[in-house]
Each structure stands twice: as structure tokens, then as C-alpha cells.
Image (cartoon, rainbow, N blue to C red; front, side, top):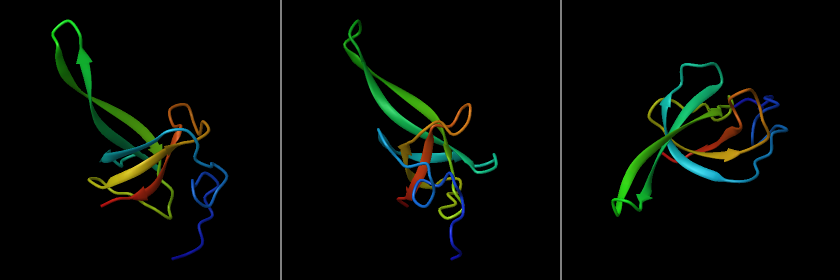
Length: 95
């Protein structure tokens, strides 16, 4: 594999991970160097005394050295703001 020259890479570049780390599934890889990661979580509703299942879709930077594809389960980490919508970077592929 070639040397990673991406300045926004979370491992080799200047956008070092900090804050929260999330595991989720890639649901879109159409944008250039960006993936949409979807995570499922449960929120408790006091009024009905039940749990509500919800989803969160997070845009994350996809460096060339990792290159996550549609359907991959990935780890993402919070980093400094990379663009208007991206403040997460993909740090690894789980499966």
C-alpha cells in the first residue's frame, strides 16, 4: 500500500481524533472522500414507559488509506471540524 498523504486522515494526517468514538454501518459512499455512517440507539419515553428505537446518520471523512465501502461496519471518531457537515473521521473497518 502506498504512503497516506491525506492531511485530513485520522491516523496519518493532522486531524487527530478526540472526544467520542462510535461504531456504525456505512449506508452511503457516493460523495467524494465522505461516507454516511448510521447508528441505531434506544431512547426512553417517560410518558409511555417504553423505549423508542431511533437512528442517527453521521457524515464522516473517509481517507484513502482506509477506503470504507457501502455495507462496512466502521469505527469513527470525533475530530476538529473538517467541513460544514463533517466533524468525524473513519479510523478503522470492523468488518
